[in-house]
Length: 237
Image (cartoon, rainbow, N blue to C red; front, side, top):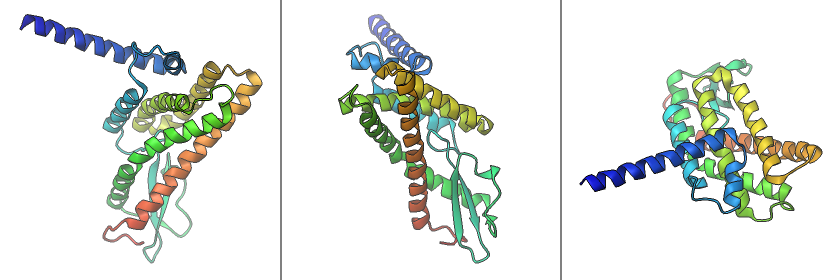
């Protein structure tokens, strides 16, 4: 029994240490985990998909309103006839309601947000695949294997979802959080693809712009699907 307890403690400390070592590298050494994996040095680190799932689970447990790495929130408005308009934005309340529209009740907004959050779950994986596609198109001469770009995408979005916890809990910090994600991406690109200053600037900007567009498009697309199928008493269609 004592031997079993010793082995159990050893395994716990080993796994626990690996998790914290991986999270430390993920947060403070952009691109290191991806580079280690590309070089075949994988035994010391949590695997990319597993760390992604762990971080997403942490995000879901702590953040209850913001959705995705950009912490998209729902703003809902209706006109006099009851027709609704949906706004998807990290901070929809910071802007005035569209002309002629008034906010719906908080209960109605929360109901839509709940369904939006549920529908968005699959988009997390789409985002990683899109990252890999954009990254492969931009950097394929430096890294020709698509699967390696998938690994980079898993690590980048793991960082984003972890940092999004801060923006989710403290919406006032969402802009600094978004800036930190952009800086992280540029540092990651520099480490992985050894781009010079000019190459880093235009390729990093291109990748960042593509990712921001994709995130916004996915959020609006999912919100549209949810709105089309939503049946809440008192809510127009």
